[in-house]
Length: 238
Image 1 (cartoon, helix red, strand yellow):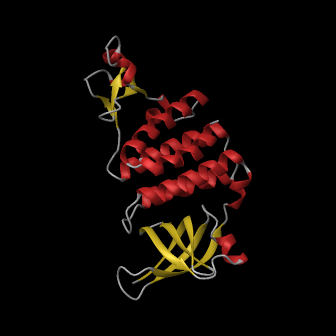
Image 2 (cartoon, helix red, strand yellow):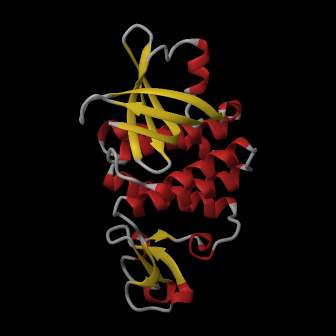
Image 3 (cartoon, helix red, strand yellow):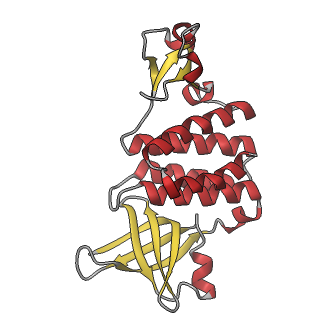
C-alpha cells in the first residue's frame, strides 16, 4: 500500500525509543495512521505539531500493516498554542476528529472544513467567532458520520421561519409555535439562528450552539473516559 496526499496532523503517540504513531486526516483519503521514525527529534517534532498541514507519504508492505510515514511541513499552526482559547479548541478538535472517524473513509468536505477552522485560529479569529466556527465543524462531523441533525423543517409541522429548538432525542428542529406551552418545552435544546441562516453569532448563540453539538457528540461518541475530553473545550468556552 502506498499513499501520497496532504494531511492535517491530529494526534501523536510515542512508540519505541524515538518514534511515534501519528494519526492524520488526509485531504482525500480519510483518517490514516503511520509510524514516524525520529518523531521526537527537534525537526520532526515541530512538523508534527497538531493542526499542522503536511505533505504525507505512507507506505506499508501489506494491507492492515501500520504504514511507515514520511512528511514535509506545508503550513505550521504552532502559533495557535500561544493563545489559551485557540489552544483548547485545537486540542479538542484534533482529539475528537481522531476518535470519531473510521479509518480510511474519505471525508474531503470535513478535511477542508477542519483546515479552514485551523487557518482561522492561526490568523487570530476572535473568541466568539472561533466558538461559532467550532460548532459548525462539529455539526458537519455529526453529518459526515451519519448522525446529522435535521434543522430544515419543524418535526411537528410548524412554520420553518419560526424554528427555535432541537429535540434532544430525534435531533429534529421544533418551531417556537409548536413548543409553546407544551410540558416538554423545557427539555428542548435552543437552536441558534446562525446555524440555519449563517452570519455572525453572538456570544450567547455561540455558547448555545456548542451546548447543542455537545449533547449529540456525547450521545454518539463521548461516553466514559472520552467525556473527559470535554474539559478541554470547556476552557475554550470561558
